[in-house]
Image 1: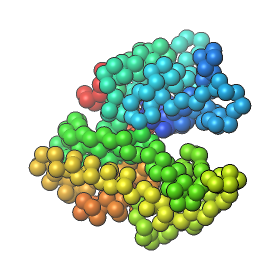
Image 2 (image 1 turned 90 degrees about the vertical axis):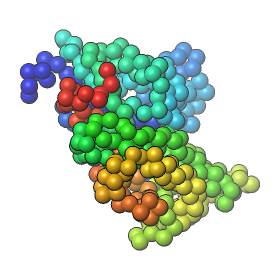
Image 3 (image 1 turned 135 degrees about the horizontal axis):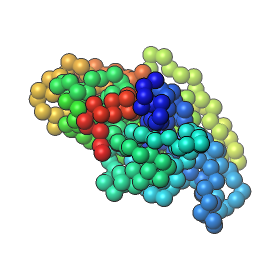
Image 4 (image 1 turned 135 degrees about the vertical axis):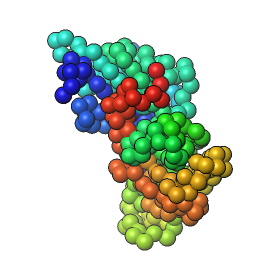
Length: 341
Ligand SMILES: Nc1ncnc2c1ncn2[C@@H]1O[C@H](COP(=O)(O)OP(=O)(O)O)[C@@H](O)[C@H]1O
Ligand SMILES: [Mg+2]
């Protein structure tokens, strides 16, 4: 342990639209959904993370509202985002010691957020005790987490499909050369599933059930080499109002997600055509790297590969690639000149 880390604490935070991860001492110490439960009568924060998620739609208290402050890749709710950041830092317990340490932080933010939003994130971290703060944009952190040497003069394409946004970026020499962020990602896939079940099966399902369907039988293509088993899905019949169960096949979900995935493909093609030729030549050799939870969709790599005629690689543990990269950025706090002050 170096002298700095003995007297000081260092924390890396991936502030995702769906999940937030905190790394401390090289370990993931917090991995929680980015959700805050608040009592609207008193504005009192009741819970954050998994505990808040469990309350969604299940509490008898009408005043309890569950909020995802970063929904859509922007800070939709400033105040709640600040609570989320403070609570996440609080949950690590690092500030509980007798002498509060000097806290150094790197925070990963969606690349679509504005300067004002960025400042709000910084202020929340300061209020939670951070003294030195740097920020990093999501695709850059993903690239680092994948193991790419981002300082090299070589182009790499990253596609990070999270909850609220798909972020497509070409990175070279420590900078984001081309960048495209669209609001088509995991949340929209869930909405596609809800819509499909209603239209096709006359069945109402909640968002969390839709997410389970997506995870169990989600697919980007309708011919998989290793198809998952049909998934028994519970919901309410639209006509009778009674609970019912439907077996859902992956081909149905591939159909339900088709249009959304096509929009991600189009954004990738647009970014490729905006890429300077030298970097495009690099990408032709190295291919496309996928990260984020959305990259776990069965057959997505195959589909993007046949659309772009490029190799597609999925990051190891894609849900944590960005957090890993943010952790590496923390260790290169002074070396990585591209970190945002
Ligand atoms: N196995 C899976 N198949 C498809 N989507 C998944 C899978 N696992 C998680 N997801 C989706 O990934 C998204 C979260 O990804 P994440 O990278 O954590 O997002 P963010 O960075 O925006 O917080 C959610 O929409 C979730 O439903
Ligand atoms: Mg993310």
